Length: 202
Ligand SMILES: N[C@@H](CCC(=O)N[C@@H](CS)C(=O)NCC(=O)O)C(=O)O
Image (cartoon, rainbow, N blue to C red; front, side):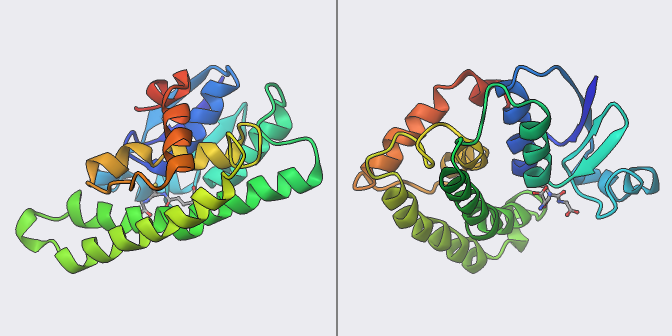
């Protein structure tokens, strides 16, 4: 059976949990507690040399990095497909996933480092406010990309799944989405209604 090395609050672990659930694949969750630095244990470094989650073991084939894992799952278990058929659509999906990985999610990580791992008195309010502002700036691009579409690459894809992993944190960190982002709000509601959203929460 597939084993997923995961930590429930990790956004990048959730990206993979959603794909496994969407594809109907059975998997065993192996929790790696980041709050106890278990990701840096020597045994775990044999699985993930960078000491992070997620990592995946598919019958002895071990790999890491949420984007690489999800591409592997798409290649190995193609049904239901989570990338468009045409190369332009696939590239669009990958570009939007890249935008999430490199421009959107890193600011959530900044907030997580402040609120999850530091006592209240030691948190840097300026870092948190700056990160929230950077996240909000990403909304313009998401809104534009969704114009005339239900999902970022037309059909539901790995691109949408990447953002789905962060949606609960918008509320938790009090980052409101202005009602002017109509496409984005409708898309968020669509993503939250998928059974894989609730099923991937932990
Ligand atoms: N590019 C990697 C990033 C993985 C990553 O940053 N994981 C975080 C949790 S979401 C982590 O393990 N942080 C603990 C650490 O870096 O020590 C991916 O997409 O899987």
